[in-house]
Length: 47
View 1: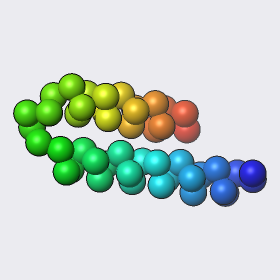
View 2: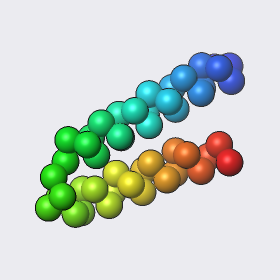
View 3: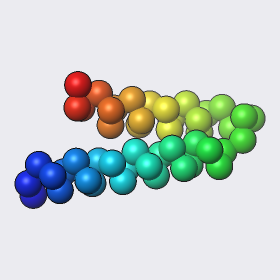
């Protein structure tokens, strides 16, 4: 897998996580926390 393919795959992961966050309710605290932790991991890989 080349760098561009890797970035595209990571972008899809982030889009999926953000979509799940937007579909979750504010009462789903545990799920939202888990999703935010996944998002942080995906983004921090590139910094």
